[in-house]
Length: 255
Length: 279
Image 1 (cartoon, rainbow over the protein chains, first blue to last red):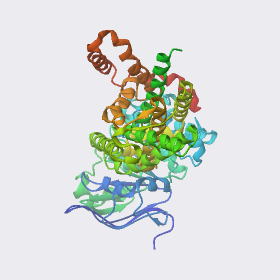
Image 2: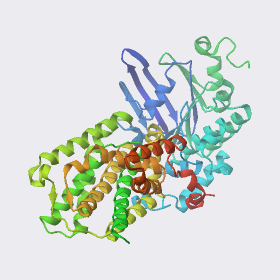
Image 3: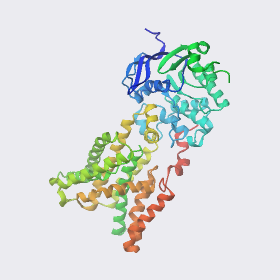
Image 4: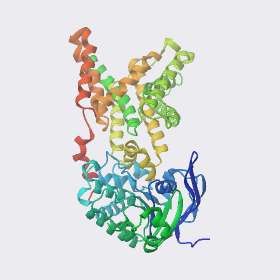
């Protein structure tokens, strides 16, 4: 039995597409309050793991435990309601909605009546929380804009803000700094560290090595559907298996 | 108001409801080409309930709406598996199926049609049309409507932020069908006589045109579309035989220059801005 404070746990998870194994008996643990990185070459199965964790795919074998309960058989919206939110590798925003509307629709409204009342979905509590998320993500000035009118890095932030609005206890980020410039990546790093300080657990897929090394408490390395290494960033960086499989001779950190 | 003007006004009221029925379903990204079928069910049911069972018309219309809505939910489930043009084809098939059902259904008069409905005032028709329009306009300002739009914009993302997309899409189908059912009941009382041929494919297409022409992102779009499409053929009467050709040309022109319909959400953004209690 693992430590009870793990938020997400993969136990012998297998995912096959036809004859191809995308994930092969994958085990890993995401402890509460930590930022865990999932790295590996393209096609290693990282996004597949995300799709399994968020319920978008069904597992071929194995078990996925979120806060002590299996999520196997749950639909994506049920997994989301349990407390897992995610962003996408290619940004998926609602093209007709303003930034603010993204937050309102993502925030769960428990009262069915308020859900159908005009402007009922934006009660005081919702508004306060949403304002705080805008503030955290630096989107306050852009609350009224449609995502198409925002630069790419900002659109990523809208996606993160939308995910936060659903009040998750685990946030899955799929390549959040892809397409961001240095400044934007720096801001994102700050934001994620701040979210961790507030107790949010984060699992992140990222190719930007300096970013991952600065951000993560723990890193798992996937290759060909297998976890080939795991440990603290500095351990992973030095692991010869990882070096040869993925990072290259210089550890990928020379740039 | 002259009888002629009153008749046109009633036509617009009923057309508006037909347009709204398509609009609500389309808001979740589903195109229904079979809404005349829900109208037929509402028309026959409201007529039978009043003529045979002696129910007051308002109660009969409510029941007709509920029954059509229930049927809409039933149709909505298989519709979940279909998208775009395939959904359009399936709903079209459902429409034709319903039409031929009433053609063969002897108790409803079959091809001979059904009569016995008394006349109803234009004001009564508009009381329904206006209430339902206001209802949809208010619904558009709700969080539920944002869920509809989320499903339309990106169904998978909607699913992954915790929205039950199945319930939303099926619910929209039921709501649209219910509105079409009420429209059918009013139509029966306005026409005093109904037959299956009145609820064919062309009727379903008309309903879609109200939305496409007037605007598919705000509820007043179908109002404008219904008004234009009912009145234009009248205004073009001087063209005699060329009337329909001119009508078609106008339609193409509008779609060329405003694909989103004449009215769109952007025109109303300034109005709705502050109402979500934004920072």
